[in-house]
Figure 1 (cartoon, one colour):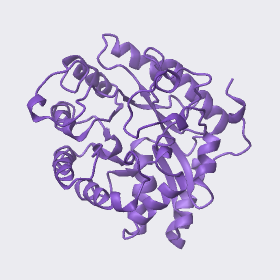
Figure 2 (cartoon, helix red, strand yellow):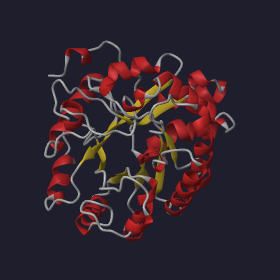
Figure 3 (cartoon, one colour):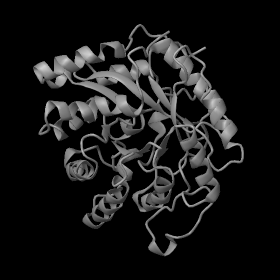
Length: 344
């Protein structure tokens, strides 16, 4: 059973209404009518399920600092309520939330139950351990159809081992579980073989390590999480981050999420992200960028209402058709969302 707070009369709109909502927005061009697919969010209930980073003491080092405020249940009804009436969030994609190693199937089943009860999420990115010998069996089990619509699992994320800071002297090291690790690379080949999306979250200084995998698997859809994690906004950092993005953007199967761009110790601000947005858009174009909330994690630095309004402000100079791509259409295409997605 899901927690009582999940049994809510508040239900999201059906994706069957998405076409009508798109037409309404194109006719009115009002922000309130702009349909949104949140391409990267989490739901969890650490009172019932074991997430080591949410449940254990002491807390782990975290890029936003103290995260005690999110060590509690966060479920679809709260996400829908947080968006408010000013934002037409019509669907969402769940991102794996670091359940305990070996519990990936439990996570998939819990997310499927959540979707059955509430209508959200509409798709999910599951956790798998790409550097393990049984990766083929892991993927087969995770992707087994368990609902009338088939599997919710559209892709896989396993955060690679990464250096804590940019250090060119260590750039060629092959760390176990990193993008250079042969076992990890074999796991990626299994993701490609099954036609799944490879979701990648690494700091920008590791993005170049993706290039051999893109060359080896040109058919594999890839999504870069959190804009390649630029970190601080120092001009030298942004120049190096931009160069790294340009290299992976040269591959047409790579898309990127404009998400997870808070800075520890300060609220999310437009002025910190205007240049970041301009650079992402320049490299990837409107057809390969997706806005996403990364909630509840980014709730540590902003409200969902403020974040979505900031995305709207950043994109205001774009045409209505191009804004639809960033807020909605690109996510529908990449995650193969269907108008039949909803409660069963």
